[in-house]
Length: 269
Image 1 (cartoon, rainbow, N blue to C red):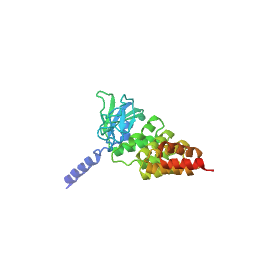
Image 2 (cartoon, rainbow, N blue to C red; image 1 turned 135 degrees about the vertical axis):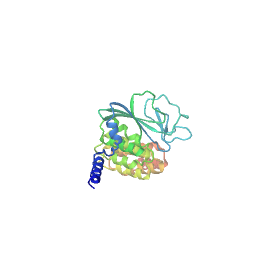
Image 3 (tube, one colour; image 1 turned 45 degrees about the vertical axis):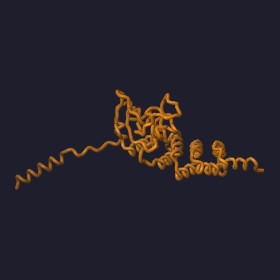
Image 4 (tube, helix red, strand yellow; image 1 turned 180 degrees about the vertical axis):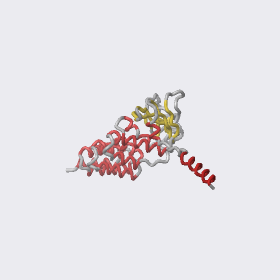
């Protein structure tokens, strides 16, 4: 019996002294612990997003055509015709110094050049990548904070616009970050997001420039939702600068409802 108890005690002692499972590092921790220099990571792109792997990212790719595009890095590609459009992945090139991300570039499609001196973190989950980018946008105070907003809109299976609304209203975020949040909110907006944009325009506590960007974002919406929102702003907003911006963007639409408003205002006794 004594020998059995000693054997059991020895077994328990070994079990208690054995190291436990290593906790998985978050993406932010892995980036913060990377050596100074370039850090690469990729994540899945949502449907409709594609790119040429260099300077072109399309938000409405179809039949190998890049459609509406955003030039994110220097590129010689200027054609309006078909392009080499690949449906992902999203590739992020981060510049890390002292554990902080100082610059960020976004690509879609293509691959990293062989032999590039960089720490490659491989494939990250889209949701985790978006969390990291939103945290960077909220907490950052350099160029990378503003650059972090756009790629959040490219991620697969992530509904990001509620986070963009919160970011646009976050007084602690830089003006550049808030303006980027408003702009990309406008690009991703559905009816609910359009309501949030309209509410931002009417919020006197928000920075005037941020509210101006919300007016612009509304001007980019489909006319059935964007034009009525802009007309309401032009008629009722208490800030003359905001009303002026609404009139300006209504003038760019050519919509008969906008023309009727101009006629009403100009002929009012």
